[in-house]
Image (cartoon, rainbow, N blue to C red; front, top):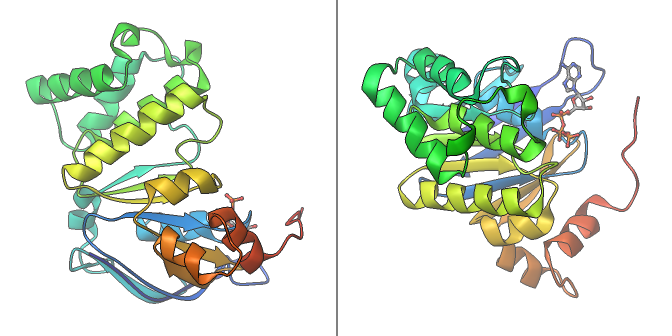
Length: 247
Ligand SMILES: Nc1ncnc2c1ncn2[C@@H]1O[C@H](COP(=O)(O)OP(=O)(O)OP(=O)(O)O)[C@@H](O)[C@H]1O
């Protein structure tokens, strides 16, 4: 489904590579977790796969479509839930979603029905006509999520979709994503919530300093590391306990 072939990225202003010679294959219908400490290169890798950032070298394809030769087809195939809210604060939830849906060529009844359907599933119907700047963090995250899937993409990329939300919102988001996956959407997501990733993901990759450290099913990674009780134990063992502060 997704074939990543020796992808590297060095930003113009950076001294080191943010992603380095990374190979990865993700199969159709997986829920794949990209894990790693702050600055590991997760957002950079996702941004490359969404064609928002150009790799310095290497190549990738999604569903057999090469990123250089099939830009427009790829755009329709994927959905992106960015880390930052990409919403207009002074527009209502419905107006925001109408705008994002129209960017993917949706309009009229189809668009209206899809917006209402997803607002309902994510528990936001009664807030459809309220302005986004009155919404809590968890509500904004859910609107952000709807905005990215109105065109019903085959592949959905999410950058920390459950950061800063309460447990209730988190559960609704995870359950929603599991249902999307059951209906055939391949999911690639980044997270620092290792407990969440352990149960949510079919496979994970741990990356650090732009390099792939390991990959596999959470249960296999845990059983392959003697004394590890959970994914966090594996993660700390492979990436160390040192803080990753930089300015
Ligand atoms: N636009 C940019 N210009 C220069 N350097 C960048 C840029 N974006 C990211 N970097 C650097 O690339 C490295 C990887 O950053 P990235 O945001 O991909 O990591 P991450 O794993 O997503 O981190 P976090 O968990 O903190 O979101 C970091 O050292 C970061 O400072």
